[in-house]
Amino acid sequence: MGYQCEIIDPARTVMIVVDMQNDFVAEGAKLRSAQAAAMVPRLAQTLKACRDQGIRVIYTAHVHRRDGSDMGLYDDLYSPIADRSSLVDGTEGVDIFNDLAPAPGEHVIKKHRYSAFFATDLDLILREWGITTVIISGTTTENCCHATARDAMFHNYKVVFLSDATGTFDYPDVGQGALSAEDVHRATLTILAFSTAHVMTAAEMLGRVKVTSPKAA
Image (cartoon, rainbow, N blue to C red; front, side):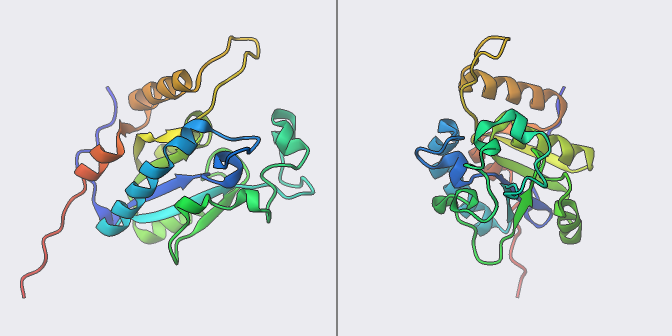
């Protein structure tokens, strides 16, 4: 079982970098994912390789207006969002972490829910570009990356999910027992591999990129 992506066509593929923002990655951030922070060097190398191969890169940033007009239920779920100390649009915290900064001309899609497709123009852009395959990287594995991967599949995109360029955080016991980041990450990868995406490492993904031979003079 599980979807298989044997060849990646750079002209029809986009790398989505999900929410690698200061508020999720920087040291001391209230919503920091240590797993996501640890994989920054690998992701940075992967993004360079993608650009070199002609794969487009697009970023997402989870933000909310300070007045709460786009908040939904997030202020009930996360105290740093409720008290406006994290993910406030226009603050440094929502900027992409500097080591992963977008290259000139690359877009950052602002989103207000887990999925990068919900109430954004991401699908419009991808269809304009003729994209058929999306690669998912970023944080968190089980929330924004998972939701974006699922919505991509719902929109008929083939999905590649990077096992070593996604990450999450430790879960406290909220009535069902605590879970380590490693357990949450592994469980999510297993679920996605069965039902949604081809899960692979960044190196495996780059090894599947179709190399176009230069045209004869």
